[in-house]
Each structure stands twice: as C-alpha cells, then as structure tokens.
Length: 365
Image 1 (cartoon, rainbow, N blue to C red):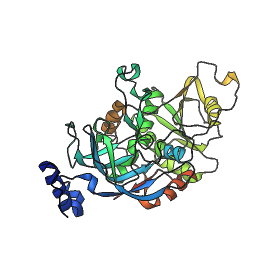
Image 2 (image 1 turned 30 degrees about the vertical axis):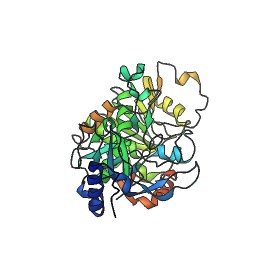
Image 3 (image 1 turned 90 degrees about the vertical axis):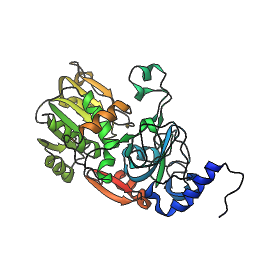
C-alpha cells in the first residue's frame, strides 16, 4: 500500500507503523487508528436487539485515550437503555460502562495515563467542570454530564475512547473479568453504602452484582447484612448467606430485627414501602438505581419517626478513587459469568430474566 505524498512526514511514519503493527495490536505500537477496524455490538433503536458491526477504530482527541477493551460487565443500566426506559441515548450506540482494558494510544494533552496501562472506565464519562455542582464536589449532578455507554460509546466493543480524566488505573490482583463489575456495581454500591451512614444493621434488597460487592465491604466494616431477594429465590439467598449475610429471605418478608438502613438495588418501586417498614425510627432507605418503577402510595405512619428516603445519582471521580483503593484491601471478590462479546444480547436477556448470581461480563478481545 502506497502512502500518499500529501501526508505530512510524521503522519506517514505513523501510518507505516500502523500497517506494520496491525496484526499485533497488543504491542501497543504507535498507531494511526483510523486505518484499523474494531468489533462492536450496536444499539440502533430502543427495544431492538444489538447488532454486531465492524467499525473504524477511532482516534483519540487531545484529552482522550484509546483503549483496547478486554472485558465489559453487563449492568442493569444497560438494560434500561436497551429497553427504552432511559430515553435520551445517542443512537446508534455502543452500550457498556464497566470497562477494563489497556491504553493503546494517548491524546497529545494526556499526561497521567500511559500506553500499556490497565484502566477502568465507569459510567461518568465527562462533566463541565464549571457549574455549581462541579465546583462543590457534586459532579455526579452536573447538568451537562456525559455518560459512558449512553452519551458516549461504551465497552461492548473491542476498542473504545475515554476522557483520560475519567479513566482509572486498576490495581490489585484482579483478573480483567473480575475487575469489570467494580466499575459500576462496585462504585454505585459504595456510594449507596456511604449514603446509608454508619448503619450497623444493613438491609440489601435485590441481591445481584452491586449487593454482592456491598455485602463484602459492609462485613469488612463490621456491619451485619440482611439480604432480601425475589420471593422463592433460594439460590440468591444461599449466595447471600455464603457472603456472610446474617439473614436472607424474600423481599416481602419483614427482617427479624429493626434495621438501621436498607439499600434498594432492584428497580421496583413497590419495595420502598416494604423497606420503610423494616427500618427503625431515624433509619434511612437508599434507592440505588438510575430507574425505578412507580412507588405506590403508602401510609405516612411508616415514614414518620424521622425515617428518610434518598436516591443515589451516578458517581463522582472521587468515588472511583476511594473505592478502587478500598476494594483490594477488603478484598472484594466478584462472582462473574463470562460470555463472548457476540453473545451480548443473551447476556442482557439473562440479566433481564434474573438468572445471574453476581455479574455477567463480556469478553471483548
């Protein structure tokens, strides 16, 4: 292949390097990425299956990094996007926001991240940095925030771009598959646990990817965990007990003791009154999902007594830094089922049907 003479000398050298290195991408040689191809699972419209496509590998902007994706966990937010419950995604879209991979190329202004570094990319993809929320440490509420796998293409692909300031080095002895759920299930779970304050008797409603991580951190901190699952889901109850829950039962059950706090991870509004009935006066109910079905009417008496209901929205970069430092110390161990990237639709289906203990992770190489 001849290199056009109109290209500047430096670009010619980069293109030549790309052509020589293309069969060996994990050498992380200097690449002119637009000449390469990537695999991706794409959402063209809500309530339609993802479509496998081959796309050009994008080149990073000055403040971005190009990442060769190793794994991407499948999270309930992805379901809300695919099923049309979150209504403003970019389309077509590559979903996925629990990404683990290696930096292949860095933008000209990037200094913190280097090629070859293992990084994770979470839901928060960019913020404005100047609004009242950003300047007060609450960038998770930035009205101009952009989210990975929603406004920006995500990790259901062999390659992805990320703003360098919103990607984080992954430490510890985690495999790429085991690290992926830390990037949302772990981060949102951590933020929910912080919102629950110093609750010593902690209820977890919906015992999936986030709850199985939070349970480990809660026990590490000396708390007692009470797990609530779908009615009759004895396998999930056994899973919770195996992670140290002192009690596990149906979501319709009343806990054996008054609880200090309940975190709701299941997107079911009807759980809110049930959780209120479980917490003591002064207790708190934390709603951890980005989407929830309507909360039914309930008597004021179960809220009275200075009980509180709060929601958790998104995450901050500080959340990521704190939790990714904490996880290896616990140590958090994730329960994962790994599926090929091409089976992303089946992975979403298994999550939708409640067939997963722990987290489903896509292998993207």
